[in-house]
Amino acid sequence: MAERGAPLDVIAASLRRERARTGLSLTEVAKRAGIAKSTLSQLEAGGGNPSVETLWALSVVLDVPFARLVEPVRPQVQVIRADEGPTFYSERSDYVATLVASCPPNARRDLFRIAAEPGPPRRSDPHMPGVVEHVVLSAGRALVGLVDEPVELAPGDYIAYPGDVEHIFQALEPGTRAVLVSEHS
Image 1: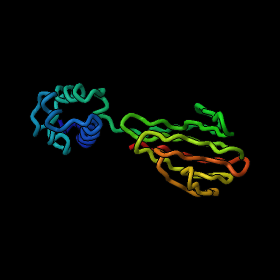
Image 2 (image 1 turned 90 degrees about the vertical axis):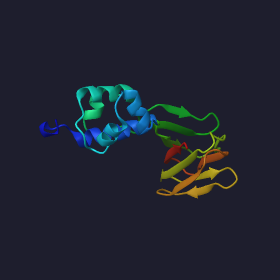
Image 3 (image 1 turned 60 degrees about the vertical axis):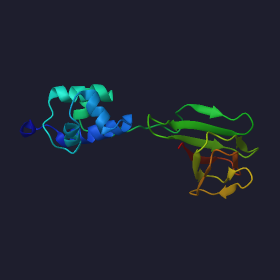
C-alpha cells in the first residue's frame, strides 16, 4: 500500500493527535480497535501497512471521521471584523467585551476585544481557580490588574495577572481598546 501513496506521515500525525485529544493510552486504543499495540505503535511512528479495516476501527475508537486520519490538516482561517462578534456590556462601567474566539474543545483560552471609556472601573469577581488573564492595550490608557495593585498601561503594553482573584479594567482615556486572553488551566 505504501508504494501506492498511503499517506503514512499524515496517518501517523493524525493518530498521535487524535489519541492525545481523547486522552487514551496506546494500549487502550489498540485494545478497543482490536489491533495489536505494536501495530498501533508502528502506525504512529509512520510505518506499517494500514488496511482500510484497521483505519476504520481506529476512526471509530477515536470518534473521528475516517478522512480525518488520512487527510492532512489544513489551516483554518477565521476573520472577525472590528464590528462583529457577540458583545457583552458592563452594568457598572462603560466597558464592552466582544468575544473574538472561544475556547475550542481541548484548548483552554478565550479571546476578547475590549472597548472601554473613562468612568468607574470594570470590577471582575474571581473566576475559576487557575485562570490567568493576559491583556495587551492597543489604544488609550488604562488601569488593569488586581484590585489592590492595578498597573497603568499604554498602547503596546502587556500585563498578565491571576483571574481567580478580584481584578479591574479602568479606561483612563476615551477610546481605550485592548485584547484580553482568558487562559484556563
